[in-house]
Amino acid sequence: MDNKKLYELALKALENSYSPYSNFPVGVALLTKNGKVYLGTNIENASYGLTICAERVAIFKAVSEGEREFSKIVIVGKDGSGVPPCGACRQVMFEFSPDMEILLYDKEKGKFMTYRVKDILPLGFDLEANK
Image 1 (cartoon, helix red, strand yellow):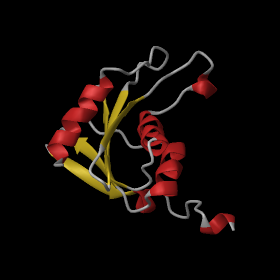
Image 2 (cartoon, one colour):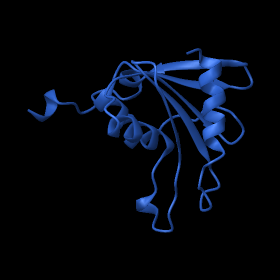
Image 3 (tube, helix red, strand yellow):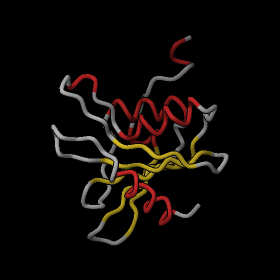
Image 4 (cartoon, helix red, strand yellow):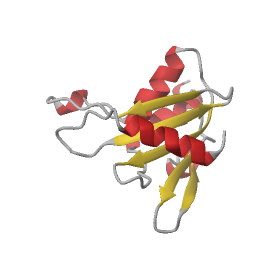
């Protein structure tokens, strides 16, 4: 699936954000190595520690359906620009796919900025570290 289509799906996911406390909606489209797409959006709670980011929603949905390997994720904020993942989301991404591409759309430049999980989370924890 091309990046533009994933971006459009991430914008669609953004519409379902429940972010009344931060007013910072986020939407994502996650592409698995098998070609399936999972959408996610952030879901906040008055007890802030119970809030979950859009990236983890999409990844947890995919994992709960048997997916374990991901090729790319597009992350967008309310203005359609890319939003970098938080540290917790970076670690969850690293757990499953350290080589996954993270695509952040730069509206000013009109193009995607591409990063790899392992590059934005050096020394992430993995199965080998836990043995």
